[in-house]
Length: 315
Length: 62
Image (cartoon, rainbow over all chains, first blue to last red; front, side, top):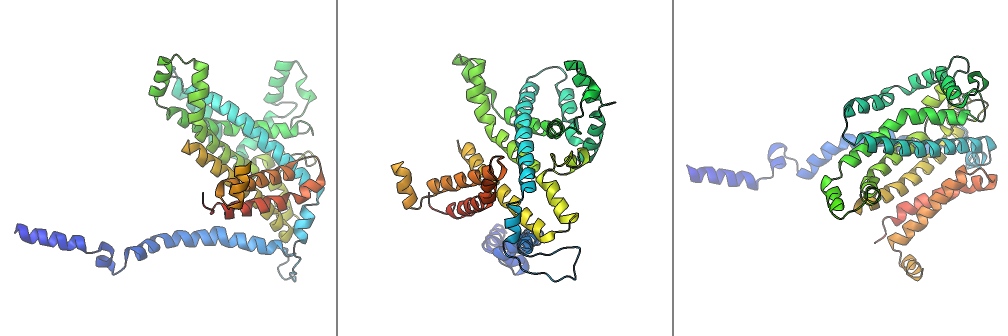
C-alpha cells in the first residue's frame, strides 16, 4: 500500500502540471495569463501614442472629419516652439510645479515628523489633516473661489486680520500678480496630506534600534535627524516628489475650477492650453504635437528620477 | 575626468547616462526658462536627444 502511494506520488511529481491538465506548456499558460494585460497596454497606451505622433505630423481637425488631411511634417512642432503664448504657459506651469513641490515637501515632511511623535489625539489629527485629500478637485476649486472672494471670502478676512490690510482691497484670483500664488496655495492645501502620508510611512519604517544606538553614541537630536531620519526617509520623499511632480505637470481640473486660466492667461497651465487647442480651437494635429512635446518632457524627467530613486534605494 | 572620458570611449553605462541626464535637465530648463525664446525653441530637440540617448545607453554594460 505504501509502495503504491509512493509510486503514484513520484509519477505525479515527474509530470509537468500544466501539460497534464490542459496539454499546454508552462510557457504557454504564462502567455495566456499575460496576454490580456499586454493587449490592454497596446490598446490603451501604445496605440494612442503612435496615433498621436502620426496626427502631430498632419493638419487634422477632429471637427472636420470629411476634410482632406494633409501631411505637414514638422511644421506643427515648429509653430509650437516659436509661439510666445505657449512659452508663457510653460513658465506658468514651471512656477506652479516648483512652488507646489517645495511647499508640499516642506510642510508635508514637517507634519509627518510631528505626527510620528506619540501624543494624545494623534489619530484624530491624522484624520483631520488627511481630509482635504479626499475631496474632489472640482469641489475644492469651487469652494476656494468663495474663500478667495474679496467681499465675503474667509481667506481675505484672515489675511486682513493678520496684516491689517483691508480684506476687499485685494483679489487673489482676479489679480495678475496674486493668481499664480492662489493656485499654488490651493494645491498645497489639498495635496500636502498625501506627501505627509508617504513621509509618515518612511518615518515609521525606521527601526527604533538605530535611534537607540545613536543615543548610546551620544549623538544629538539634530545629528540624528540629518544622519538617520533624512537619509532613511529619502526614498519615500523622492517617491512623493515623483508622484506630485508628474501630477502637477498635468494639473487641469483644480485650476480650471478656480481661475479658468485667468486673469488673462497667467494661470493657463500647459494642460489647459492644450485642451483649448484640441477641443475649443479643434486644431487636433497641432494639439497632438503639443502633447508629444509634453510627453517627452515628462518621460525624460521620470527616467532621471527613477534612476536617482534606485540609486538612493541601493544605498 | 580622464576616467570619465575613458569610460565614454569604451561605451560604459555610467558616464553616458550622466550625459543623457544632463541633456534632459538642460532641455527641461530651456523649455521653462523665462529668459530667451530661442532657448525655448531648441528645448524639445535637446530633451528628445537626451531621452532617446537615456533609453539607448541604459542597455550599455556597467
